[in-house]
Image (cartoon, rainbow, N blue to C red; front, side):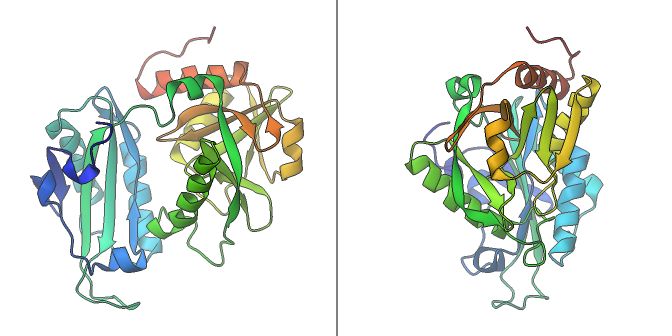
Length: 297
């Protein structure tokens, strides 16, 4: 579907309790979610027709909405069933699934207590987030100029639309310079995450990752930590300073879209995708497809 605008894809979208034709899933230009970013969403993947960790994603969607001060007008079971049926109606096996909830257009202004809360779920075919050749060799990251904010200044535990504005800015700047993505530091100058994925490093067989105190503790992140522990790897969650990057051996990203993606470069720092990256890539692929884990070659 490369090159086809998303508003021109075909099929159906679940919209406020019913399935509507793709082209009829519309909102008004004065929707509060568009003007004031009062929207929360999820990114999910279906593998062979099954949405991976659907219930965990739905739980997070509801938690995100609660943090932003609104209540989703459907039960979690209704959202789970609608998500499954959405993928089935689209006839998809390997797909990306996007639930989103937002304040409507009944009030326009910062205050919007009386606005309707709308919910939609769309799904579409989704290949690897990064180019296959990049993923095997390790992608290149720039170091973003924008930083993840202090938790006292933004609802960082919510997967809220507004928090991704600086991610888009950072990724665009990185791509302009020929990078695939960017590493974001936090407001303290510590390593945080990439623009849409969590980050891990290895040194002497130990896996290090930033403690998620100002960014999302990703569902894929937690899954990969579990898989790494099953393999006997020690996991250290801690504050990581940028100057430490010179001492790490491997680096990889984790996320619903990114899955497990090795990194070969962050600015002036170089990494060699190795045994740990390769094993966790294989283990994650087995996990999401419900297959037995195997030792990577």
